[in-house]
Image 1 (tube, rainbow, N blue to C red):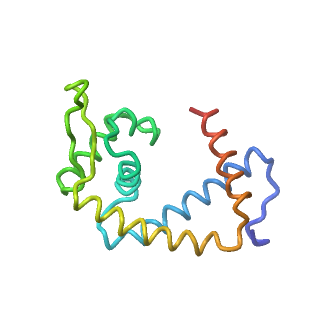
Image 2: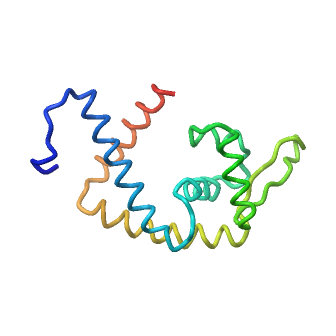
Length: 147
């Protein structure tokens, strides 16, 4: 952190400030990288989540994104119209729909993921992997306390 942005804040406030700044910088960078794909960051996050959990249902996606099912449904509706995902009735419960990527969605996810992985490697260069794993663990624990 440069001296200009160094504030003398209580750790409870500084943690929020720092994570907010990280989130917004990540959001801005992701938006610029995904602009050619014509997707919002929220759609992208959902596409990635589905790509790592094909066959998941809407409740899982809502729980994982910390969003209401209705918000996920709206995103999925637009993604379905764009031909990126398919919703298939669950074999065990026909009322429930499982979500899969279409070939178009899978190709987009792979292409976008390669771009974001390359950018992530640049940003994380020189960082100790154990430190990064510890940050992930701590943020996960703090998130669980808030939900």
